Length: 354
Ligand SMILES: [Zn+2]
Image (tube, rainbow, N blue to C red; front, side, top):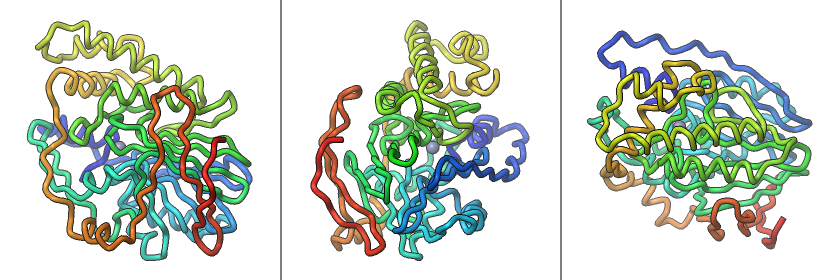
């Protein structure tokens, strides 16, 4: 597997040129509240850590290369025992690190589409022979969400919502309220870098726009909005990002059917947004990937059967699939299952609105 950030894109689309060295690890720590920390470093994905009496909850798990560095950083928190991990989607820089936390007893939550996305071996020939290798069994999530889930974590409520067909088809966005006011958007939102649409795993630009709309509707003027990669922003920043996506989509649709992408066309499609997209070259990359999927019938890549372990674990009944009722973007957040996380484990509470 490769990264879902700009470095991966560069390697894939400039395959004939000398690939730049990956950027060095620059792990940065931001304290976002009494119990919340953000670990960021470009190209590695942003990890949110929430401390509770029941242990540590992480949103995203880092790559296998970086997870040890994250683990070291977490040792400085009041609690460093990772008990719960939420994977925003199946790309390796967000999910590979599960292999460190799972043997230590962490429950790892992902959308049920990830079970297939992360367990298939595919080569996307038309996309620089992108080889997507299966996630090792040891890194597989242990719990699956169909639509939404709500977790009580000390004074905080952690709401997890599936946003379909966005960056992939298995994206989760995570809202935390209580002692903090946070929204982790996963790679539905990438900042200072080109957003990426994984058309081969069911991602779409339309779905990404709808997912951002949901994030806007779900946040307040005080919400700290965390992207999958890049610096934090707020609801206004999320709205600017939505406006950019909508404009780019409209400009692509104005192009004649069958128009091929070149730099002139890419610059026209993203005119006015180069800074927001991390520079002219990043803007061109985003124009290319957006145009790519909108101008052809990209279907999720043919997949081999899920790995034996994924099937076996499901058949063994050890995995909980959380339900919930899907609603349209902009509607009230759905009723979702409510679980309280305590030192002794998960306990289901009656559901209700909030
Ligand atoms: Zn990604």
